[in-house]
Length: 293
Image (cartoon, rainbow, N blue to C red):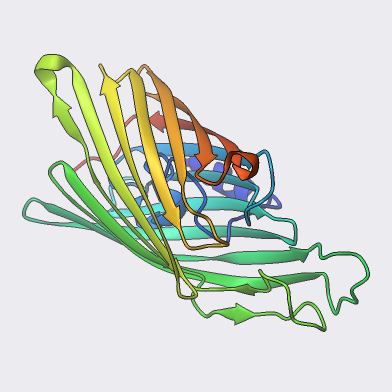
């Protein structure tokens, strides 16, 4: 426990970054980034990181990074987590660090988790040259609430991030995107289906997001063999910046049921000359279940 608390303290002391819009294709591997209430629901400690980099910049976000650490507090029905997220665009860098506290309880065969997140956000603007800036940097408080539900093989979660819609006008012309922390709503649902006789597992999941009247959706399907090798694909639709959608193909390996490494290749559905390409790598480490019931 002392090592875990020390890790949380170190993460909070690092200059960190976050995303303003839904980006990651592997949302099933990065559930904490969107639904922090998943912290500790399985009684284990998790460390997850992800890097999503787009090789050409015709969409809003071309680089997103994430680092999450979460787990239970001894035998209490309380879990904690630290989430670090990064989004960089041609106009701004948005960075947040959030500390989350989650409370789990059971009702029959249903497991519930509710959580509140508190942190700090930093906005750094990089507008075109020649514009007069009022301020390049600003630190803002950041709040969020989330809930998670599990019953058997099925799970679902919902989160509201950046509560308060805190605005900060950076340019005299007031024309730049990203000048505020806009409220975001995320809905995640899926299932973990096992076929013991074939030593196969199937993980379908769906992610929905909503911000400022704009919606995005993503669905993915992962197929695993012996809980060691994974293959999958996902599709994403969006009404953000004229995106017509993306396809992603994923592959992963799970070592000793503890270390998970996955890679996805994303491509847009624009014309070939304008088609964005992105690479995403996700690494997860799961420590043994320590919570006793």
